Length: 412
Image 1 (cartoon, rainbow, N blue to C red):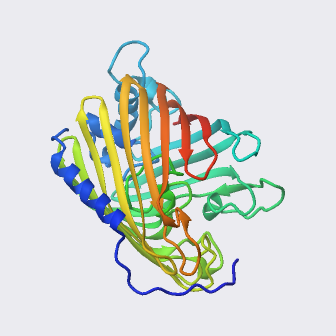
Image 2: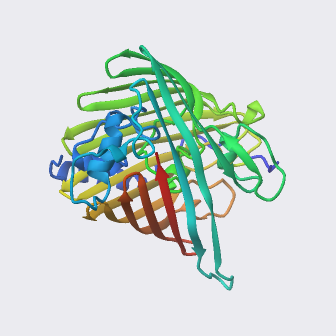
């Protein structure tokens, strides 16, 4: 950990680039025609994530409707049909009781190639990315949910270790158990859920690309950025949202690393296939385990989101966030993704992203730290059978080697 003390700046104004980005996004929201997750499920009219997931903000354990939608709407149907089949059930045919929902996710990086750059040789690798089981049991209005998984990451990895429940550090890539979520909740009323435990942070677009800059820079991905706390969600009609009081991540030590504060996200459906959202996050930690700062750090992120389906098979996702961190100048991060379903279950995606996390004072800046850093993704995703998908991405990022990655995913 660095021992250099960082100066604490006063209040700073948002940079002109960020203001322009927010204004442009606002103009776009006003212009785009009314249209009626995977966030792109919006195009099918599924704006309320809780209809397909036990988590009202989306992700992880599927409901019965979620299993049916995966088969009837999401996946390639080799039989040409469009009605949900029994094969969409757990393990291709096991009907679950309504009071118990179980599932899991197995993801393998079948190929990761870094192209040669600046005289360095190309690198090829493959490895398991995720092996998790999760579920939820309900007893009357009370819910019990959680996950347990297995991971192997290099010692010192800033990601998966934040979800460790074991502490094995033997070897280059030690094996450990992880629990990304675990909670108890109560349905206060229809569409209102109160939960306490380790929960996904409500912020921004909930997407599977956990390395996208909007998720990395705000530390709100579903890989290991969950926090312990209390969350209240509301999902009725055109509005869905959640606010969380963050008590800290009690799977990291010492206590000085634990961030405490709040996070929230809300989305309103302006039309059947057009939703706009607001996000806000503020935390404070005595020490920052990512930046390595020895001083207390206040970290803020505030932004807007867009999900729109202006055409039948085209979905647009956008997010723009302001970043304010103790010891750094004001920063920003944003992304814009276009997802086009070429054939049923086969998606082509292009994504542009930008980040400037802010520059420490008295330190020379560069792309991503006082200057904009740009990135672009060209992706293909194929949901080739119920609960299976394959994805390939070509990622070009400023000051980084061009990478090509391919992964296979089974979720049950």
